[in-house]
Image (cartoon, rainbow, N blue to C red; front, side, top):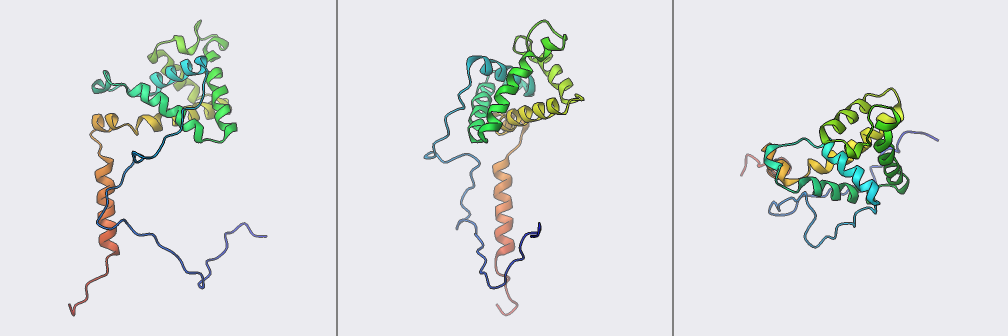
Length: 188
């Protein structure tokens, strides 16, 4: 038995998927007819901790102060948990409680994480990300990835950062069509 993947057989016909005809617009969001998953069922305590971590991890932009971005990040993160393996989702759920009690257990604060302000909670999370304990570093990395992947996918955040991913993707699709188009011969 070999650990290498099997070599491609020349007798097998390969299928290449092309772009939609006419350069159809690419969407990073689901279609209107697509139904999003229901958010992962977290209890009130876990939701409190998740909201505190969202506030601590997400950068504060002046143009986003009056928007509901943090609430959408909270819901989006819980939706992502639904698509994870059940053991991983339950592990992150348990990790929320560990992170909530860690300031008290390490004698660094008299209050739990969700009772601290976003700035102070962010300092704790940054310190835990550099911890000697690998399990704690991995937990912080998982929670940070979960929250920030949803945060940086928000259209309001894109607008505040002056980032237009749809235009970039359309440009890449145009370039791909141009490169894959049959070359004009000199006889034409």
